[in-house]
Amino acid sequence: MADGATNGTFLRTIEWDMMDKRKFFPLSMLSSFSVRCALYPLTVIKTQLQVQFRNDIYKGMIDAGIKIYRAEGVPGLYRGFWISSVQIVSGVFYISTYEGVRHVLGQYGANQRAKSLVAGGCASLVGQTIIVPFDVISQHAMVLGMGAHGGKNGAVNPLGINFDKGSSRLRITRDIAREILRRDGVRGFYRGYTASLMAYVPNSAMWWAFYHLYQDELLKIVPPWVSHLFVQCVAGSFGGFTTTIITNPLDIVRARLQVQRLDSMSVAFRELWHEEHFHMFFKGLTARLVQSAAFSFSIILGYETIKRVSVNEQYRHMIKW
Image (cartoon, rainbow, N blue to C red; front, side, top):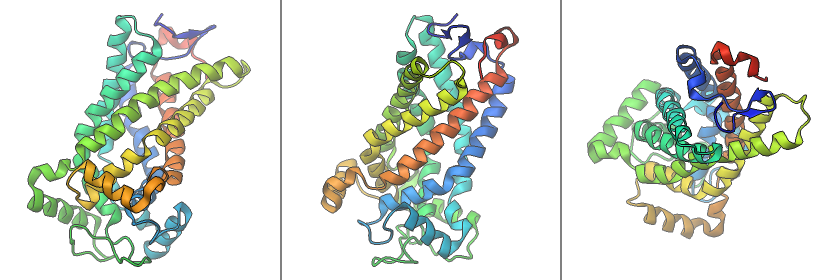
């Protein structure tokens, strides 16, 4: 049995070599797409809150959601969704790297938290390398025309894209990609890459480590009849809360580098500090906390359910739902 795998008579963690990959990969992609589709509006709201100057357009998360919906309807809350949905592909590489590194470290006797910390960081490094170009395009799409429905600074259009509400999503995506390529070349699609790594690699590493930490602690205090899957979902949400609070300023810097086309992380930090001072640590935090908690709960619900469905027959008697 894998180290730290059992609690009484059931598996705490279903390891990589315990699953049928033919079931796991397609179900994982379907789950990832469903979660991203359901929670994408929170990503749009969070990004627009992060790039606005102080509170000149939106007063907060709810105000942003209402204004975007009134101005553009549901499509406004799904700006850049299809290009962002490429994250499903990066998600396959992410989870394969995570589980693969955990498996290798397990062979060297590493404990659960150490395996999760290292594997989470490695997985994010691989995932970000694939997704950053699509992230850059989708974030430009998210903020395109932002502020036209309120705010003293007018609409946000950092690339000068010819934009109107009737423009198709495909045309907007193509125009953004073409303009980035014209201005910056291929390197433009990796604008903010270092900031993305600094924001997401520790975020991913800590999230998985905190997830296993909270799961272990919760299992010590909850009654035995409580669903193990529910405990895991709650642990994922707690992990999301913790890492979001720690990494929020880095996520704002990443968003501003990619959207406002600033020269470096130090420039982004200085501008953010000049605008916000200590408020920079809380800018867009409510939206990000809500997004992170909902995303973490949903991802773990799908991920751990799929692992249970995909587990090999010899381990099924050790599964607790």
